[in-house]
Length: 604
Image 1 (cartoon, helix red, strand yellow):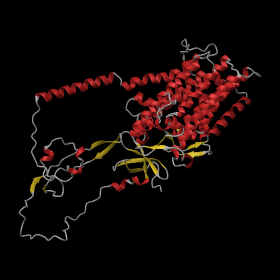
Image 2: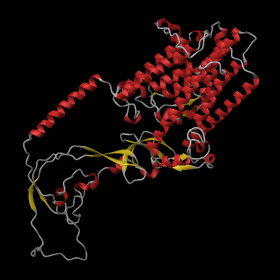
Image 3: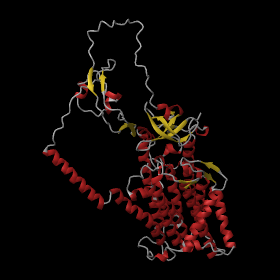
């Protein structure tokens, strides 16, 4: 039975040990809690109900006020007049007030850092004489203050050998005057610190140096790809002529279209229809994306009926792209500022290094929420809906430019992209268990990626529209089969993963074999995830290859985009596996031995 709720502060037992640490409930089911511990790495483990308790259960208990010791029943007392020959008068020493600063002791366990806070308070009373007596019940080699010998900071052998039953002899410490060598060492350290400060002031950190080309590339690449394929030419052999004046990118009408579209999508987001999903960030997500798609598409014929040309979206393509990129940069900056005021359990572990550009790129917050609005989930839905509407507008443009003469190749290209995007909207609940939602922060990498998808992926259909590449029906049939195979692999793998993460004990998943891990969770080693470690990426590759096949082999740009997509997906596999290795440790090594191939069985 559940005792705690999400965001409750608890004490939880670290898996595989008898140590208890503070943590926060981030998810739960009928038998387990998912706890995020308060260590530097923000480790998350699945813990049984019996291993989670209230923090008040661990408060220090008060000692008994009685100073007497009970006497054994079978032992007679010694006469007060006959002192023992082993008796020795207790030594009277002067007590010293010792101020011990708070220390953070880091213990390595299961390859995850844990922070143990040991606090010794300074007595408030004045120093006075006391009696130090020997403790005959404690071994000589035990460490004072119940501290583990392994964690003891003392390195002097006399600290232990000089004790008699934990009574440490009191010796006077003589502070010697600093020698010439010590003074020179201090001077050298101060000079080195000054040089280091000067270097940091003028030379950026290596993380910043790496981030700058990534940000520039993600902002320039969509513009270069779109300018490489126009009505006049489509080539990658020469650098495209990119307009360098602001009037080619800034347009009030484009800003109005983007603003109106986002406002409508926010209203549709809060329609009280669809299944309610409550992610750990406290938002309330309604899985009503399919309703938003239908209503958004219904607005196109309505606008055409009102004599409003929807083809303005196509004519303002460059301005809409620039406006979307600028809006994403602005929202990311707002998220960066907001990240300084959020609780620690909501922060992105890789996005709070203290460096501006790396943190802005990675995102300081993992999944921001504004009241009931899940910003990351909303951004993904808007990306899919905008992608669908652009492909519909491209098909409408072709029908209006060539009345009565439609292009089968163009219609298939538009339908395949619309179907892929609509599938993600229909199964949008699975987005909450993807690597992008659970491990990628809300930074420029995510926001610029969403904005680029809207205008970059329709390049396949725009090329067919502008250059009328037509294929025979049997080629179209083979391409449709390749697309269907890729879609089947992607959808089956994502649905299987989502079902297993949501409820691993579901009867429908009883036939699947899993591998237990030190984190308390299981890894699938059968089904699609038993054949490859990343079957969903393999399906995505087949899907984008089918889009490029529709463009033929006359133009290189579609295949350049396929290469860029494969480069990204292969890089993502190594990123995901590095994160899993840190989280699961030796269990991940066992999994990789069981499932040997990443993307292509017997190849890679």
